[in-house]
Image (cartoon, rainbow, N blue to C red; front, side, top):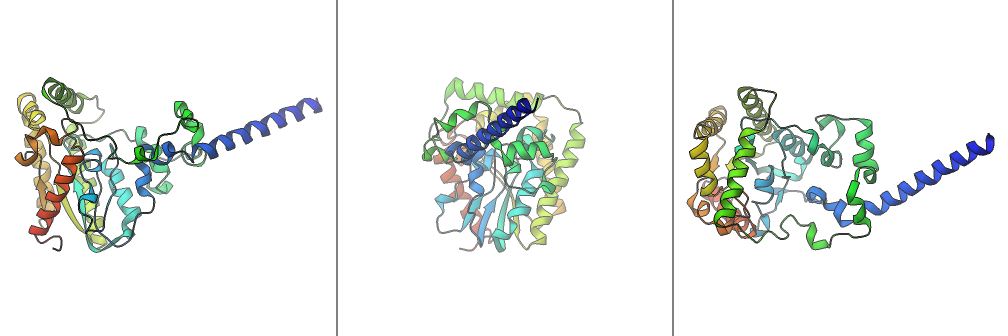
Length: 316
């Protein structure tokens, strides 16, 4: 019996050691470092003059490299809800200089729906303290932060077949665009995803929650002497036309959301580029129906900065 127990203990120790060895190799891969582009939160400079939170529309739609004269940073992540916009900004707010500008994005899909946070929670274990997560457990902390190899799944192959360094950038391979039926089919599908998802709460309840969450981000900026600015990034005229045709009432709700915020915060400007003809009809500036590609992001970033300067929000 004693020999059996010793063998079991040895097997457990060897298995644990193997897992730790594989985990050490996994966390050194380019794939893990940049999964969900979480590497953007490494080495964030201080004394930022300008920055943004948001989801994929600002993650890919704003490229501060287009304005190298400005000290700026992108704190957006794909599918990042307002709850995590607030948490991320709160935890990195000391990187902003006093009176810095913080861009907050109002996206179509974030007005009258509060998402399920669970599918996106793993990434935030890596950059946020547990008190700022929507939910925390010891098990998740182990498999997402301490020993992420345990939750790698099929991505364990990256230990052997890693991605090259250039693929770590969120702007990698975002130079193409859609045309014709391909663009139209994408927009029909995106509209359906955004408007027909199952829900457990009412649109009115989610609208109110999102309004409070954006308000909390604005209040956080004011408390730290930062200058919040609301924007909506460009959308193709194809997707806008589908909304007009299938759910025209949506734009009434969307405008009411921005109007409610502007009524609460009359000094917070709102720049709505969703129907800006500089972008919306130029499909070559979009990777798809609602996300700018690299050329579009560079043009939009320069346009946004020029508008902020013209409005006296950002110094010349």
